[in-house]
Image 1 (tube, one colour):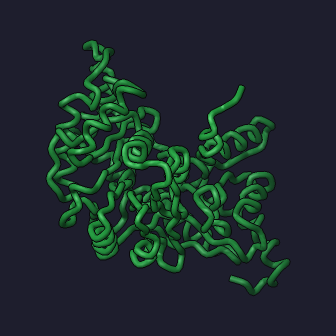
Image 2 (cartoon, helix red, strand yellow):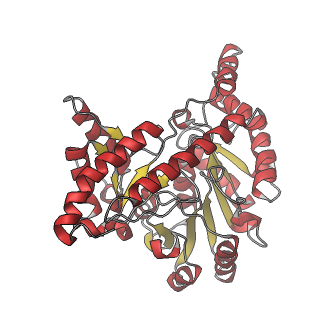
Length: 397
């Protein structure tokens, strides 16, 4: 069977492949601590689950409007207006099954063959995959540890050409936990306005912020009409398996998004949407408790990793990932990830799963228990210390 040529350009999400390898190792009787998947280890709050049950019981088992039920679009508009700092009306809200369709639909709707899209490197791997798949040119913007894993607006500006159509930003970020400052976002917005660019702002981790207030680039002057905001319920409400996301889009993109939905998934699950209404309008104490627990876990893993010779780990300001630098081991991130899994029973991801800049990094998700995090640090130390001492001696820190 001869596949379409574009299939050679589509990538994958390595976290799922790493998890499969780790489960295969577990099946042989080995103990493995899973720090590879970006998924909250909490249950979806009971009030949200109950709302879905009630929806099923009253017959919410049929097609819904393509862009979402009015009640959810209104709830999203109200919540976004309050939390994101700009006025949102339901007419600009599009509900989709998860966050990834927003990426796909935005790129399909805007990018022609040869058009350029600037995206963060390291960044969520589906950005580059979808850009390449549709025939666009993926232009990485390096996100460096020495800059606190924040996108450098000057470097972004240097990458803009006449073919640039779209800029993708992600704050708080996967895989680094980096957070753009308001000043960063103002400078990025200036680049977008000066060059007539559209921005896709991936704000899926916007509620998982440990200090300060979240800033959406769409709230800045002249940006709401050129920004696609991507958000959803997976991370904030521990609803990864529910597949519920949304976009806030400028008026010219409402119809294109609707047509893409009709041609792909028809609509989003009815009962899931009613669960989303409850998530946004019901109690938020479970979210606050989850973020507080993540902050404790963050400090455990950062302090633990930094105590290992040859490992340098910044303290992330958001999300639930760390992205330590490990070049002193003499191994690449990919090599050390394999060694950690096979010798230490710790499943992490190579930094190159998220782009070329991460060659000397690993990504750990700390969406796991405190006990498992401490044990993972212990196992990581047992693997890394001999490597570093063999190369540099015991004095390296």
